[in-house]
Length: 183
Image 1: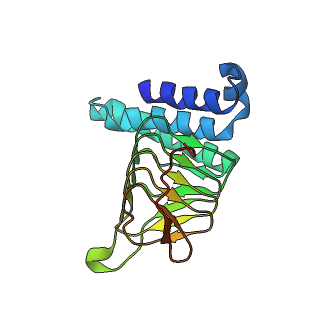
Image 2: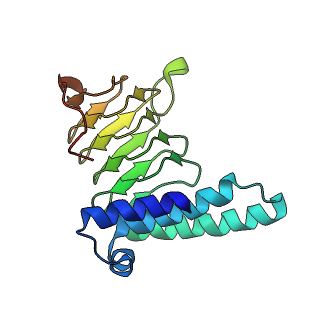
Image 3: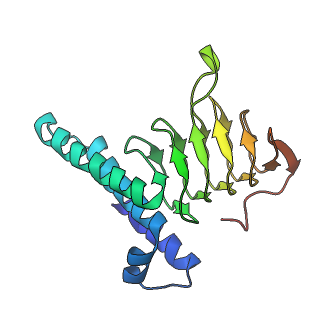
């Protein structure tokens, strides 16, 4: 649960260092991340099948409950780096095959999903230090570089180079500003 510790530290920093108990009781994004980290640890463990399978069934039930309560869907098979932050409640869908790097922030209404045809069909791979604005959609077999800002209401369906800001439908580069200051 080492990664959860860095997630919690990030939440504390953003909240003005509220107590861990207050954050755990009041922050839905943190609930979803905690359940994800616990479930992902089981999924990636070397436990024998006869132990792992029932634990994963319980994890899926727990995740589904969190999804219903928070509106945040993070399947246990997603790969998410340390210091992950969900800024606001709800409507966040992450595909089970997505890869998200370290130190990323996601706002409400974000979808990271599958799209495309034939060899272009797939899910996004996100680098480190990415800020994703409210209601952004990232779909398809794309790579988003490090230190990227994705503006609110953007549709990202093509690769995004590192250290830039993109916005629009479809998303286009609008500046060379990186995510420094957003994360």
